[in-house]
Length: 169
Ligand code: SME
Image (cartoon, rainbow, N blue to C red; front, side, top):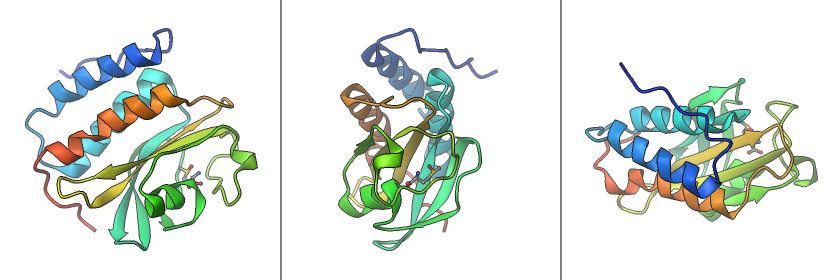
């Protein structure tokens, strides 16, 4: 039986991410499959914080196209071109983007109208190539800050350490 994902909303973000990192390390110990690791990471983060949407967009055409991968929450759009929306911008720039108010972000792509704020973290493989992005939407404004950036970047660092099989396109 798999462990129950704890509700970490009452914890400091730093403590919460430390606990999630520990769980992720145990759960993905033998993993060599990118999709399995993305699915497990999305489930951990989504249920620990009660986000609106938590998931991955995978690079299916380098420098050109992202396609939805494992996620939790309401329906996400399927394809996002590099440079479009928060995900496409984070992919094009290879850096984390925190959006306090999605309505004030030019080009934001609305998948769920309840979304108020968002964080998108790039995911790199062991060679430094961009595998995709981790995208999280919250129904609360300004839900994300530097503790989330640090915690989520630490969680997706597993993709750069492990010897994962390539992403199927
Ligand atoms: N809001 C994202 C699109 C993906 S959904 O939120 C799941 C964006 O602007 O890139």
